[in-house]
Image (cartoon, rainbow, N blue to C red):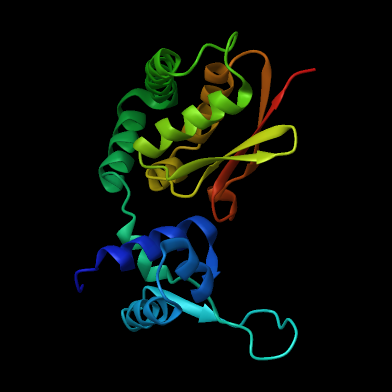
Length: 213
């Protein structure tokens, strides 16, 4: 594949986060001209990395096209050794049974929880907003392209990419463990609910975090 410029890569990263955007929206975000962004998008379209769809008409004139990632762009956001992870999980299950695999997942959970608790702010002194934003930073560093979004009195942790998606597909316990991990790491004063799930057909995973009454 042709080497992508920094501007093209930033456009792809943005479309991964927002699902779709118009050229003017991208131009404003990156401080570029509409023409420059359209040229980048047309090159990306030729590479079959993005595709366009018409916008809803608003007033007079032709509405700008909305751009989104094409399926081929998923290869630019690779899983972390996905095939190896799937093979290892299968081998553990074969060698030690489901109970053995569950013990491995429990050990992974304990290690992650200890690490998260070391770096997350103290629930007794930090607000839910601060904790979820810090958690988003941690998850982004792990490859989940995460962000923390305010939603009224709640915070939503949104993960736009899942580097363990293939492994989670073969081992649902990984997804269950992540939900439990967030609940344990963020503190007893919050509730955490998964509202979107990649493996259920959604475009991303999302977790709604609310303060307990």
